[in-house]
Amino acid sequence: MLCCGLLYGHGVAQGDQGYIQEIAGVNIIPFIYLGAKHMVTGYDHLLFLLGVIFFLYRLSHIAIYVSLFALGHSTTLLLGVYLDIPANAYLIDAIIGLSIVYKALDNMGAYQRWLGFQPNTKYATLIFGLFHGFGLATKIQAFEISSDGLLMNLLAFNVGVELGQLLALLGILIVISYWRTTSSYYRYAYNTNTLLMSAGFMLFGLQITGYALS
Image (cartoon, rainbow, N blue to C red; front, top):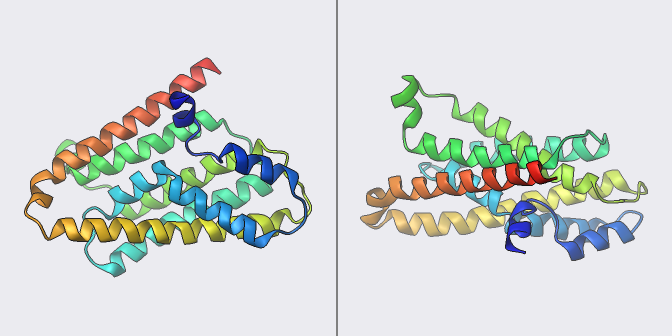
C-alpha cells in the first residue's frame, strides 16, 4: 500500500477522485479546496520548493522563483487537461523526481565543480514547473470529468493550487528562517541537500519501476 501511495503521490486522493467524477457544472469552491489540498499534501512539490528557496534570503528573490514555478505549473495543468494532451504519468513523475535531484545538486554546488559554470536557475525552475503541472494533468485526465463547466473548474482548481502553494511556502519559510538563526544551518546544509537528492532519486526509481510494471 505504501508503494502504491508513493507511486501515485502526485495524484488526487481516491475520495476526491470519486467526488470529481460525480459532480457536473461549475463548482468553484470545491475545486479551489481540492487544488489547495493537492499542493499542501503534494510532497514532490514541497521537496522541490524547499530546494528552490533553501539558499534564497530576500523575499523578492523568493517571489520571482515561486512565480516562475507557478507559471509553469499552471500552464501545463490547464492546457494538459483542457486540450487532453497525452503523456505517460509514470515518466512525467519520474522527471519530477529528477527535478528534486537537480535542485539539490545545484544547492550543493555540483554543476560549478562538474561543468565549470552555473546553469540558469530561473529557466530550470520554470521548466520543471511545467513538468510538475503536467504531472497532475496526467492524473486528472484519467478521470471521467464532466465537460460541463470544465474550464471554470480547472481555473478554480489552479487558484486552489496557488493558494495551497503560498500556504505551504509560508510554513517552509517559517521553519527555515528559524533554522537559519542557529549555527547548525550551514553545518548541515550539505547533508540536508544530500537527503533531498536521495528523496528525488527514490521518487524517480519508484516511478520508473511503476512504468516497467505497467
